[in-house]
Structures are given as C-alpha cells and as structure tokens.
Amino acid sequence: MIMTSGLAIVTGASSGIGAEIARQLSARGQPVLAIGRRAHRLEELSAQAGAAGHAPIHPLELDVTTEGAALRVRDRARELGGAAWLVNNAGTTRLGPFLEGDPAALAMLVRLNCESVVALCAAIVPDLVARGGGRVLNVASLAAFQPTPGHAVYGATKAFVLSLSESLAVELEGTGVTVTALCPGPVTTEIFDVGAPGVPRRKLPFELTAEGCAAYAIAAAERGNVVAIPTALSKATAQLSRILPRAALRRLSARIGLSVLGYGARARGVRG
Ligand SMILES: NC(=O)C1=CN([C@@H]2O[C@H](COP(=O)(O)OP(=O)(O)OC[C@H]3O[C@@H](n4cnc5c(N)ncnc54)[C@H](OP(=O)(O)O)[C@@H]3O)[C@@H](O)[C@H]2O)C=CC1
Ligand SMILES: N[C@@H](C=O)C(=O)O
Image (tube, rainbow, N blue to C red):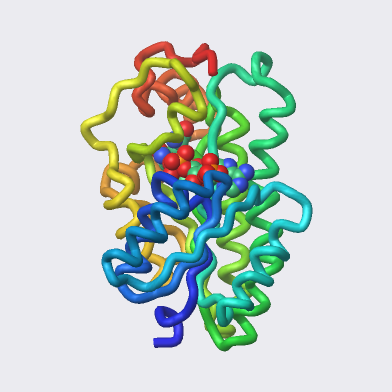
C-alpha cells in the first residue's frame, strides 16, 4: 500500500514513544528518518535496526525548534526518496505552578509542542499530497481534553495539537493524506524526569508502556483514525471531560490532575 511503503519521519526518536514508533516502523519494513538532539541515541537506534535486518533508520541530529529546522527535515526526506509518514512526536512538559515557571522554558514548550508541529506539517504535508497520500501522526495527549492546573502550558499545547490535527484532517479529506492525533494518558518514559526533575513519582498500574503506546499509535494512523485514545480508561476520561460542566472539570483537574500522573495527592504545587 502506498501509505506503508515509504519513509517515515519521526521526531523525538531518541527516547520514549518516538523511539518505539521508529523501531516498530523499521521492523515492519519502513525506512525511518529519526530526529532528536541526542545523536548517540539515534545512532544506537540505527545500529539496532541494521543488526536486526530491519529497514534503515537514518539519524538526523536536530533541534526542531531552531530556525529552518522543518525545511532541513523536508530536504533530508527528499534526499531519502520522499516521506510517506510524518510523526510529530517530539515534545516535553514542565510541571509546577505557572507563576513559578521559568518564562523562557515555558516559551520553549510552546515552540516545541506547537510551533514545530505547525512548521513540520507546513513543510512536509505538501509532499505527502503530491505523492498521492500519506500519514500524519501528531502526538497530543489526554491532557488536551481539559484544563491542566499544575502544568497549565503543557495541557494548552496539547489542546492546540488536537485542534490543529482535527482541522487538518478535514481540510485534507480526498487528498489521500490522513491526520491522527494520539492522545494517551500516562506512558512510562523519560518525560516525567525532564518535566519535573527530582520530583518523586509513582508508576501507575494503568500506565502504558512506550512499546504498547507506539503499537496503538501506528495502527490508528494506518487506519486513518483522527483522534486516537489508547485504553478504555483514557477513552472514558476524555468522554467525561466532554460532558462535565467546565467549572466542575476545572475543579476536578486542579484537585486530581497531577496525582493522576503519579505525583500523589495535593501535587498541585509540584516544583519542577
Ligand atoms: N509520557 C507520557 O505520559 C505522555 C507523553 N505524551 C507525549 O509524547 C511525546 C513523546 O514524549 P515521551 O516519549 O513521553 O518523552 P521522552 O522525554 O522520552 O521523549 C521526548 C522526545 O522528544 C525529543 N525532543 C525534545 N526536545 C526536542 C527538540 N527541541 N528537538 C528535537 N527533539 C526534541 C527528545 O529527544 P532529544 O532530547 O534527544 O532531543 C525525545 O526523543 C511528547 O509529545 C509528549 O508530550 C503524551 C501523553 C502522555
Ligand atoms: N506526561 C504527560 C502526559 O501527557 C503529562 O505530563 O500530562
């Protein structure tokens, strides 16, 4: 099928969900352009794919928030024969009260989680349309469905990604290009250490593995699902966020939001 044979661009491929998506796409025969700032991690991924006889994983050491990054990705993908998939996975979080956050770090969060997704869609989607079809997989979050006091900017960025993805999915109907917004709940990755270094957190019984989340994401993107929410619990949570009165939702999210992520009760004042 045209959708699964071509190159997959995966941002944030040096760890977590992105590394697993890259591994799984490579294992099923798709070459991957794996992007991240930690070159050694990308090279390890590439070597593992080679050793396993899987499709090649091409490392690209790149900070996707830098000027011109999206065009660099586009040009590299063209050099490799052209992209069939764009996976906008790179992202991070910052936990803690907004007023105690570092304004520069919060601005970076918006650049990474929002602006880089727009820039890469703008750079790559025209090539997907031109080739007659492709897949866009944007990694949002369950945090997209409700306000997220305690990590206010993060949730807002994920609401942005969800909204953008749904709008693009409609605009691209008939082009052969589908857009999927992946909205997982907690997944065991490095994000929690990056977003709240040194803050104790307990792994949750219902937490997804990066491997399981990646497998779900690839299948959903392959099917062209527009909103992809792994697990029944997460689906129920998203549904609850749609029907609760907004005031009640704000209170509930303020009270239990961060504890649902494993930071324990009264985690609202988490200092990142
Ligand atoms: N883990 C979870 O509970 C959930 C995660 N998500 C989302 O999943 C996505 C992946 O995160 P996850 O795997 O959990 O976390 P990780 O921290 O393990 O992975 C984040 C990835 O993003 C990359 N990245 C960060 N900043 C940049 C940058 N400036 N330029 C290029 N790459 C960058 C990192 O690579 P490097 O540092 O090498 O640049 C890394 O590969 C994120 O968008 C996150 O918001 C959504 C819901 C739940
Ligand atoms: N890990 C993130 C999930 O989206 C978060 O901090 O909410």
